[in-house]
Amino acid sequence: MSIGLIIIGDEILSGKRRDQHLSKVIDLLRERGLRLSWAEIVGDEPGRITALLVRTFAGPDIVFSCGGIGATPDDHTRQCAAAALGVPLELHPEGRTLVEARIRETAGPDADLNAPDNLQRLRMAEFPAGAQLIPNPYNRIPGFTVARHHFVPGFPVMAWPMIAWVLDTLYADRFHREPQAEQALLVYGQAEAALTPLMEALETRYPAVRVFSLPSVGDAHTRRHIELGVKGEPEQVAAAWADMCAELERMEVETQPLRPVDSRAN
Image (cartoon, rainbow, N blue to C red; front, side):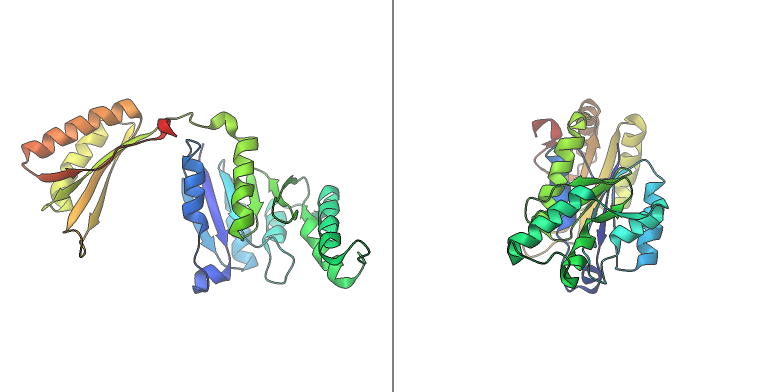
């Protein structure tokens, strides 16, 4: 199972706001023994959003989308999802009830639901035909699920519990299905090119393992180094780690071990 994340909003691309969703979604998935395969950020441009959703709807991935499901002129996600699927937007009956309840909570029990501003708010319950609701514990205004895609607001206080709900409600049977382990160390005084043959040999010898290298130029607290490691299926990681350490020792490379990561402990 591959999981993707779409982050929608001009405010992210312009730098007015910093994205917080990527790191949080990674954490939410890691807690459940899952991992994020890809992420994309797109602005509030209907053509781009629709084209992106056409592509992702056509694939097999589970996708979370954050942002753009309100009812202001710069919110296009609901409309783009419908266009990408070739279906109309429909006023969801349960969604309507939830939005109207929220209007009464904020404007009072005698609020005129037919007032222009409330009719505008009611558009937040218009979703692509066939959509299912995602409950919003913060203010009742729901997100929606359609075709393995789960659309939530851009506000973290709403989006994160809604994503957690989707995972726990729809995908609990997939949690911790594929245990992953990771081992890494810091390598000093070496260029990546000198370590590449070792990395290639390990990936050839252990097909369930991915080797990674993260070079750092250093800072006031550490000198120049490379974080070199292996991750993947736990048994193969253990074997690849032993081989890697043995080869680095043979090369007389200075190293510093890091704490291992094992998703089975989550």
